[in-house]
Length: 170
Image 1 (cartoon, rainbow, N blue to C red):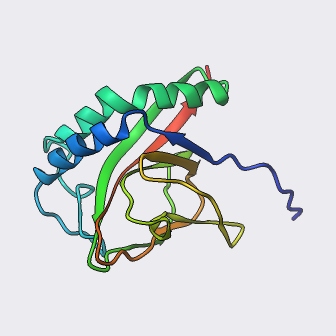
Image 2: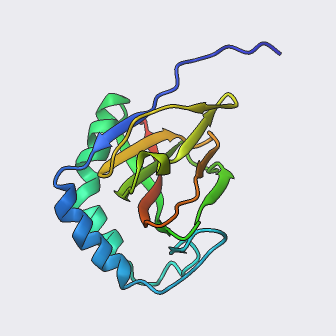
């Protein structure tokens, strides 16, 4: 087997009017039922798909279109599709172990609340941690096959909206 390295895209996009969106999204997430899964504090991944998700409706209607359209242009794709979307909150030592996402091309993380740069998602590329700079209000987009983890958060709360996406060509 011969291994060739190819360029791997990693995108950081700033969300316009993040401070306004942050308050609204956090208020809507606060309405969600308390659901603890594995080692993070609250999330909706395991809630029934029929359960109302007002935060997600707001996210789709007010934030995501211009970001995905810009990325679609960059990739010279014809259209984009979000396969699923969920939120996670971390505090009191909450974390998410290394994992990847199957049956999708891209993983995306919107940092709604990010207490510190130490709390950024850690991503492994070829077995090494990938270094990047992002801030609260950014969405990071990276290949879904890459291992990534949410490190343990202490004394502060971290909130993300994560989603899987594909760019499609006719």
